[in-house]
Amino acid sequence: MNPYDSDSNLPEWSKTDPEVEDRAYLNNQEAYEAWKVRELRRIKRDRDEAGKREKELAEIERRRKMTDAERQAENLLLGSDSTNRKELVAYKFMQRYYHKGAFFRDE
Image: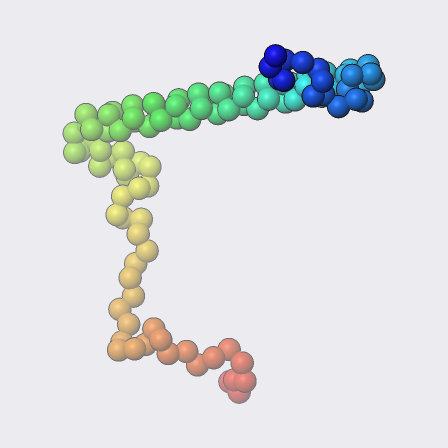
């Protein structure tokens, strides 16, 4: 006889108290519902991420099919070209490291 098939290994309180069995069943149902919600959220998140990736690939393919002039015009329209860069300042030697300080100034 297999010891795992019999009820002799179960604790005494689980054999006699039907309320404990009911609570265990409810806990199992609650755990199942929580798992189901987590799983549905994971599936939705995966589906959304796959949709975003598909949109991104479609956008890349659309941009690849454009001519250089069309791409440059779109960059100007979107503001993602090199004309929007911050203008660089020509510093003298070691000037960017020199600071007079913000405190204890008489001026």
